[in-house]
Every structure is written in C-alpha cells, then in structure tokens.
Length: 230
Image (tube, rainbow, N blue to C red; front, side):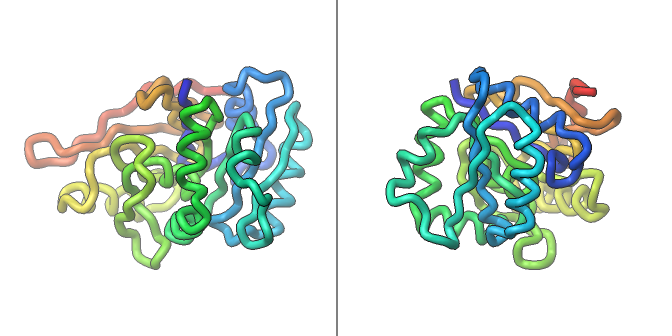
C-alpha cells in the first residue's frame, strides 16, 4: 500500500504543543515502534530544526533518526531509506530540496520506498515535493514549480496562514501556470492511499482543505470533509 500525507502546515514544526498530526503519521505505519527518518534538506539541514524534531518525536512511541545530505550520508542511501517505516520531510526551500535529492538520486529512492510501503509525509516544501507541481516562494515571489509527480495535480500549503497564497494559487491556475490540485490550511493534512485521496485530517478545529480547479472559466473551490483529530 502506497501512502503520502501532505500537510499544509502544522506538526512539530509549527505546533510543538500539539503533535496530533505527527502521531497520525506514525499510526499509518502499523508498526508498534515505527522507524521514522526526518529529511531537513529544504531547511539546509538546520540544526535547530533537527533538534526540534528529536525533541518532539522522542516523546512519541517511535525510533527517530534523520538524514543529512550536507554531511556525508550513509554509503548505501537506498538501504538506509528502505529500512524506515516513515519518511518525514520538513519545510523550507522546495527548489533546493529537489535539486539536492535529484543530485543524490534520493528522488528515485523515495519513489521505490513509497511503492514498497514506506509512509511518506511532510509539510510545506515537504508536501509540495510529492505532487506534480506546486506554489513556492523558493525564489522570492510566489510562483509555480515542477515537482516529483508521485501524486497527480498541484499543491498549495499555508492556505490560511499566508495571505498571498490563496490569490496566487488561483491566479496561477487561471493563467495555466499550474494544473488543478489541492490546498490545505495550516494544521490540515491530506492523506493519499494508492494515489487517491483517502481522507483529510486536522490538528485544529476549523482547519480546512480544498480541491481547486477551473470550472466554466472561473476558479472553483470544493471544500473537502475534514476529520478533526482533537
């Protein structure tokens, strides 16, 4: 079973006192103590970010680790990744993340891991990366960016958390710079199973997610049902 959990925002990065999304991600592995690996590539392997990951996940029933591409990684990247139950990708610069992953061949390794049942998850840049394309501020102004294409469509994170995200996403789709896709508020996550949206969950009441597309020459937002984890 292939699984991807794409967060608009939230998790330990943004809600250190509310780890319900992080626990939800761990629960999908079905292992009692899942092995979870944090990929902080998009942040330039920020040590503070890595420390916050361990601080959060050491309170949960799992075996946390991280993978750095800025220091010598394991000699056999594929074996290291395949041993994990969950891969959790942090936020930051999506463009840099994609460049580094492709240089190291990690994009293909992650695709194989996904096909072999490793749960893939992440927020912001760590969510955009799984789709065909997304809205990013990696180069400054919000613009479109081609991504890995594990999932069909585009993705826009921080839909309610950053005031320019929603109008930018609408404009990019209207002008055909992006295909139709999904968006999620901070605290909301889209859970895909075998390429199809299974359900949407949230760590805070009122967090929403949408399917966004063109309909009769206008942008249409279709609100998705959200299961509150609180």
